[in-house]
Image 1 (cartoon, rainbow, N blue to C red):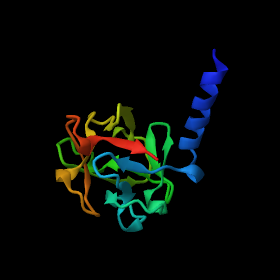
Image 2: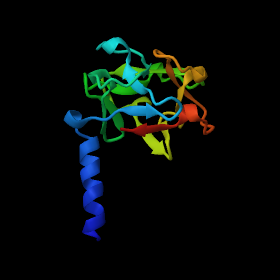
Image 3: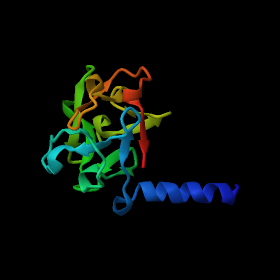
Image 4: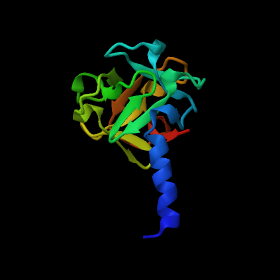
Length: 147
């Protein structure tokens, strides 16, 4: 095993899974950040997009396959486990269901529930735009990066 190669990867994974050292999830379409709308703590609060400002509601961390909010430790989820395109995203107490488990495929974030991609609905470039899941097709509104 090449320790010079594996040590930086292990450090990066540890940082991404630390709630104290969270990260932003940014859209490649408009560079805006995924956030918990209105910084609300309620189960079912929707996520959306906003200019990045470093607020706790825009801070996330990995916990296994779960993406958790550094603000309230709730999980990003496909609300109501809806299988159709346009299903809303939000946060809920973590329970480990497939609708709360995510994985990277290139620059796409996909749900384990149905393998659909996080999508910026209707190419909306405005603050407050909603996030949904949609059949993956590779457009810029389905591409994300950490910062």
